[in-house]
Length: 193
Image 1: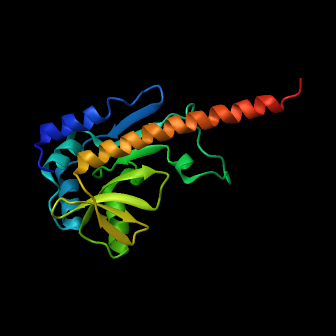
Image 2: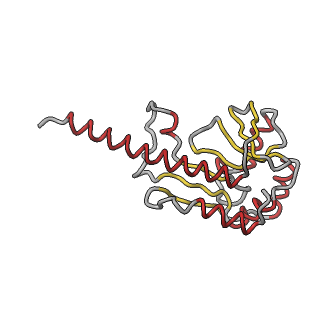
Image 3: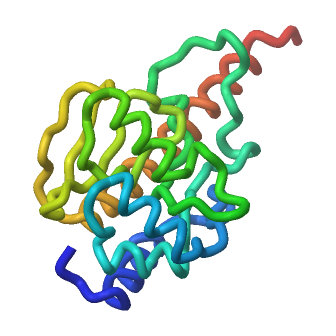
């Protein structure tokens, strides 16, 4: 991340410009305190990238989630393609009051360390996809971790990754809208009369 903090913050919000708030909720937690950042840096083994740390100070644990009325939660035991369960994207945050554990860098970092993958700062995950997480290593290289086993370097920086994943989320929402419309049409054809 070679951008300065303000450029990084501006770019992340530019990426969110196409997100329609009629279809998605965009929420974040309060800023972390210095002790939480220091504890995370000690656990990871290197300082947080400065632009990312500054972003978390303003927009901590940024979550973009499809609204229930647009993309309903799956019902218990419902079966479908994996992507139909991937309703959101979270840029993980530093522990702070009101930050849920599922959006916590520390919680994800502990899982990576327990799986024998230390030295990675987890930064992004798809809500509903428990097998993949993206992070940055000590050199600032973006990596993807699948099934807590394989670490694969990725091209580009964190803003490139975020832009790609937001575009994918928007496409999934459109695909889900089409899927729901087709389901409603099938039900309508089955009704008597």
